[in-house]
Length: 198
Image (tube, rainbow, N blue to C red; front, side, top):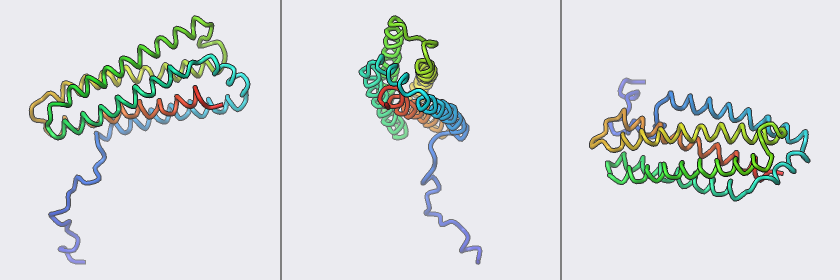
């Protein structure tokens, strides 16, 4: 094989197929997925051991809370996708889109707080039974991720407001966006698992 044959043609775009964000963020995302994955497996195992208890406990939930939060998070992820694309293109619409995503995060947390308060007033707490232990641990851990993700959205607002972005800030914006999508993906598993599966 000659040297000419092994060289990459100059016309090939080396950025094609590039994974968005920084490698360290993907390690953190995989770690989070592993932790939640263990929780999901343990939950399903416990459900298999006590299906009647889990089904009865699930009746105490109001699916409307979970449904609204699902809609809110899916909307927020769409806004983040549009904001990242706008930032790459140098468009000023990125900041309003990110403010919209932040608003969605706030709605999610307020809705979750109302739901938890109603459940606790009805006598369903962390130690009520194994179903509610999993419910409060999973939704509480997820809410903590939403709070952290909201701080990253604020950072995205600051970074997207710069006039001319170099590659490192774009990488950070993509990383923070990927983390926000993780939050959405986790909820899309948690919602059916806790609210719908019998």
